[in-house]
Amino acid sequence: MRAVYGITRQVSTSRASVLLLGETGSGKELIARAIHELSDRKRRPFVRVNCGALSENLLESELFGHVRGSFTGAIDNRTGRFEAAHTGTIFLDEINSTTPLLQVKLLRVLQEQEFERVGDTQTVRVDTRVVAASNRDLQEEAAEGRFREDLYYRLNVVPIYLPPLRERREDIPSLVTHFLNVYNEENDRYVVHIDPRAMEALQEYHWPGNVRELQNYVERAVVMATGDELTHELLPAVVRGDNGTPTRAFRKYDFDSLAVQLVHEGLSTADDESTDLHSRVVDRVEKEVIAQVLSQCDGIQIKAAQRLGINRNTLHKKIKDYGLDSGENGASDKAG
Image (cartoon, rainbow, N blue to C red):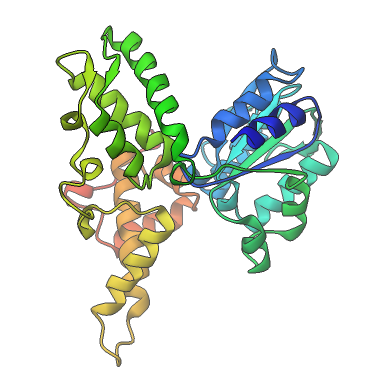
């Protein structure tokens, strides 16, 4: 971690793109913020974008903005995140989840510092420093054709690898002390002592959720403590080792692992002669996605189509095909 801090301090004074690599919860956003705060851009905007949280169409509009009428639901002009971060820093989290088409546009921004808003022909020039993060090995993703190689090399000017917490257990006492101070102040508590048994358990745990998981457990202990000590009993059973490995139903998966598991379960219910594998797996997932998005949009199809990134007529047909136009998942043709 001292090497990480050294690189962070050195790169912050430059304009170079930085690529942060590490598991989820290992502290990539904190390093991104530190790079910004230590730079001469610290009084300018720091804009974070979670690339994995939006569909391609919505993410393009979020990053580059759009003009009125460029797509259904675009009722006003909108400034994108790159423009909002002008003279500052943009942090592109989970950049590995972007599509090839969007990666082409990101490459242009990195190389030329210019882009067009969705639906516009006017070029916008920006001075925005890019810090990107990935919880996957982008070199491997590029080698397997899932990420543009030219974009990888453009992002990978200065790579910083954040080791998982299980590889730096000596940091745990300092992190626990830090989080105790934070949550004591936040909750008006005075948990200042740590039971040696509790610390031993914390240092022996494998931390699949990394620093973020440790932070959550310390916050919970502060809230639940009745005295001034973080005791062994205040830790979750999984940290104390009382219940062994989590059961399959509650094991922590990332999105890609869940997708693999879902397909496996769908295929396992079919025999070798089945010819309906697509509908058995893909159609079932699509139906559930549409049903949940419709529910979030109060059944308003035009709003749901925008969130899904598909044509409204296409959505209307799928709603009928999947029988979602009646009952608790009923959809409305209202424009909202």
